Image (cartoon, rainbow, N blue to C red; front, side, top):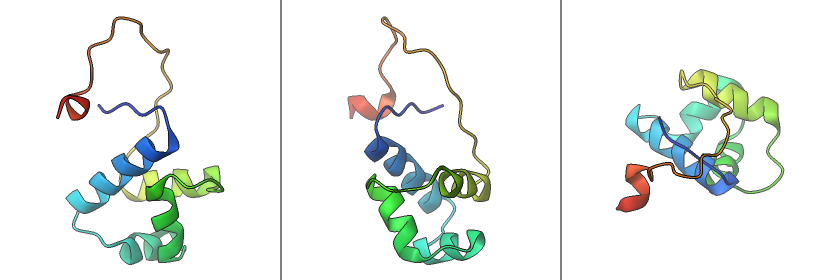
Length: 82
């Protein structure tokens, strides 16, 4: 499980998952009926992404969003170490 606290972090996680599935931004966009530029904006963490688009992308990548309370003594994610 990966954690994200900013739009840029969410975008980076989505980009990583998309690449792990050997999909281009255009291919992912086509799966959800959006343009490549929309996927690019989402992956960059740019403002203006609609929640519906985010959830469509997550579904297309077979991912889900989990809302959890921030922990004070949580171990850092492995990605933040490297």
